[in-house]
Length: 143
Length: 292
Image (cartoon, rainbow over the protein chains, first blue to last red):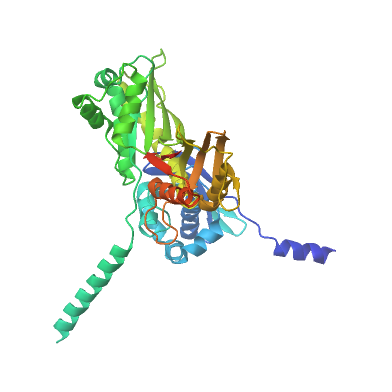
């Protein structure tokens, strides 16, 4: 019985909470407070920044001007449709070109799986949108 | 030799790209016009001329469209042209609005209502933005924006703040509807009626299978509407109205742009095949078919 429970727990995907909160913003930029986790501070900050883009692309951010997902809510389908774009965006950290500022608002603290940090990230929304349009990930405004 | 080869290759590539470009049909974008909200009895012309805050709100909304790379139809320019051409024939102000919308050829209009509130804890502006499809009256996006209260009499700045707070969200919702139109087709209205001297009625049995005309039309509509999507408003013996028929944006076979005129032609041909004498008239996205 214990072994069965162990196997079930191992097979079950555990989705981490996004921990992304809207602070302020306009149509062109958005300021978000986010918690990132990584082995060191640099990795935790990168994780925090990428979580922000995950939410903007596939979930939408309540209270902001981007309440609806920019790309679509079916994350895995959208990512496989534009694999090259997203590989470059996340793996090669191209996302950094859309980050206006990324300022830690807390110190580094130890958590399960590494270290965690709270970061205030400002994203250049209009540049991000036009980049998605240019590379055909989303359609341009209009029909 | 190498240089000649390079020049030749460049020319060949240019020719290929021109050929590919020529193969692609140019997309026809909808015409969008931003207009002010007017109350009954208000004169749209004097309101706009006297109220700078409404003009600021309208300009800010147009700016938001420009930011997305979309050019809108200028309402003030159309208003001026309408005045110059003396198109206003009615005393009714609502009619003037309708006349301008019709004259501009806009497919979509965005109405902006600006409300100023004065209070002891500061002044504020509330903005109501509504986007409609002209042909069907379908709502495309609705948002209410607040400037927040500030100790200022600069209502123009407050109006501009209220627009900034919702413009992005408003356009995002509109874009979602556009994507839906691309995927599921655009709406047209089909109004089929009879000439007073016509010997036919909707109940007339017609065609090789001798089915009533209304059923023949509905069966055709089922086959021809994009993704079989249509809605009948009502059928009487003398009239049949489809208040929402989806047609594709692109021809499914050729990939060329498709429009209500082409859909009307298909219906016209079908009615001819049934041995009828139809007449067709298209106004915006409404197709009028009159059977003689």
